Image (tube, rainbow, N blue to C red; front, side, top):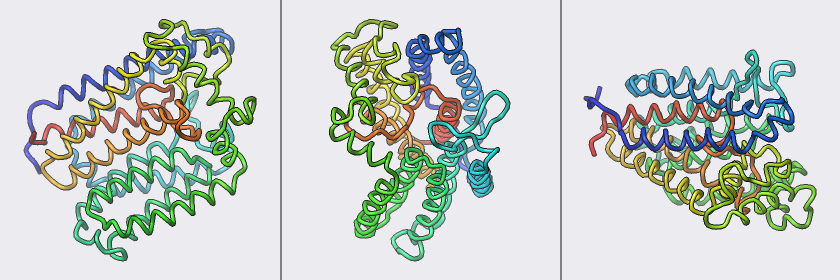
Length: 366
């Protein structure tokens, strides 16, 4: 087992807490009006997010002190558990339906989203597989095909919910890991063509997905329907200008932008804190990704490197897609912004992943 240092990456820890603090403030600011109207408590979502953050931080510090090789030994078990949970969530009466997707399992007054935890379990298992079969990854049949078969099996179960956003992040993360492991470019070109055709089939198979694509290209064609969220998001970002309207002064959170504390929280942040506030958040994410890449390069073994690459790829893909959607550069996918958006499963998962990354940093040489 690699020899570890006495302390984790302090800058990574600081960046994580900075984003988490901004997220807590913005969840309250974005949700206070809606929470007061629906629950007669302006702090309803903020209090729950604070609870999720507390659970996540405790989990992060616990995992930070568990040698990352433990996840290598338990990766298969965790993956099987997540597959079982993905199957359970599809059973009526067990899985909870929200916004047309059966993606949650109720646990008392709260709920968990198994597909979120599948992302981390898949990263841990794929890192183990790639570290043990790196030479075989250049072979399509012996290395690439088995790994992709596993990834797309999980993707298929997630799509039965359906949850295209989470499935896309998981597949994109795994593709990044396989690419870094040394898979051939020619294989990716062929698979990319198949992937585009498959994605097109998924879009065409569900009318609401097709509406999301067309609304992305021209949201004003259906301003009160499929293009409503994008238009209201842009109406939030535009008036923000350089310095913003001021913290708590958003206009779009007054029932214009639906559930602004979740997927579109960056729009409210840009409206209230302006270009400078939005740029600061993007800078914090960029620095966090930079520290993650340094940790991946400095990891003492292949498993640690692939594990760090997977975590950083997952964060990067979610940030790019979420901000792309909010700014009208991508179709609406329903993906949260890490550390900022309201949501227990997403926030806890991200903090757990950072805990793994912090432990790898204890062993890394950089």
